[in-house]
Length: 329
Image 1 (cartoon, one colour):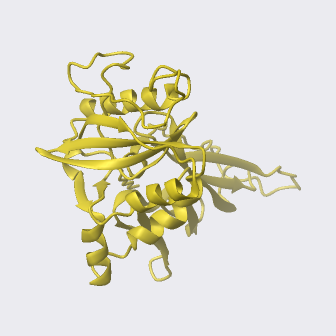
Image 2: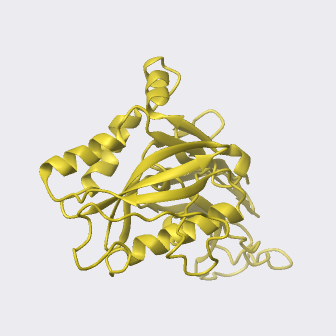
C-alpha cells in the first residue's frame, strides 16, 4: 500500500496576546482598529477576537515547530465588513494580482513554495497550471465572507521577503485568508495489521448437510486526518476493506470496501474497487483518494486495464493524493 499526501503551512505572530510561548520568536505589532472594534473595547481586549488570536498563536507555533520558512511578523486591524462597499473591497484585496498563495505537501518543510495570483493565472492561461485560482477563491471562499465580519492585514516573511494577506474573521475565528486557509497538515494513523481468522485445519466435511452462517471481517487500512494549521480536524479520509466467508473461513466468497471522505473549506474523496478475488483466500481491493484546499484540485482515475486507481493533484494551496492495492489473505 502506498499513501501520499500534501498540504500547506503558514507562520503566525502574536506578541501581546501570546498565550503559551512568548513572543521571543515572533514579533507582533498591534495597531488601533479602524472602526473594527467597539469604541470602548480596544482591539484584542474583547471576546470577539479571542478565537482568531488563539488560532494565530497556535499557527505560529506549529509553523516554527515544523521548520517552515514562513513567519507571521505583524498584523494590523483593518476596516470592518460593515457595508457592501467594504465587503467588495475585501474580496477585491483577496484577488489582487500581487496576493500570494502557498504550495505545500503537508509534510515536508522543503516543499513550501509561494507564488502570486498573477503568476498562477499566467500559468493557467499558458496551460501549465490546471487551476483557475481566482475562480476557485470566488466559488469556495467568497460564500463564507459576509457582512458583519472583520478583517486583519497580515504581514508575512519568507526567506527574507515580506508580503501581506487579508484575513477575514468572526467570533469563531479565521473565516478565510489566502495563506492560512490554503495550508493544511496531514496526520496518518498507524493502524494495526489486522487479519481475518485462520482457515480451520483439515478439509471441509463433505458428508451430510451443514448450515454455515456467513461471517465477515473488516479492516480500516487508511485513516488520514487533514488538520488546520492552528490545530483541529479539517477533514478525514478513511478507507475500509472487508471479506465474507461462506464456509467457516476456509475461503472468501465475497469482498468489498467503503470510503468516507470530507473536508471543510476544500474537497476530499476516496474510492475503492475490486482488483481480484482469488480462491481460497486472496482478496485485493484497489483504492485511491485525494483532497485539496480551495486553490488546489485532485483527480482519481480508474484504470480498467490494470484494475487500479491513479490519483493526482494540481494547482496551488495544499493537496494530497494516494493510490494502491490492499490485500487480505
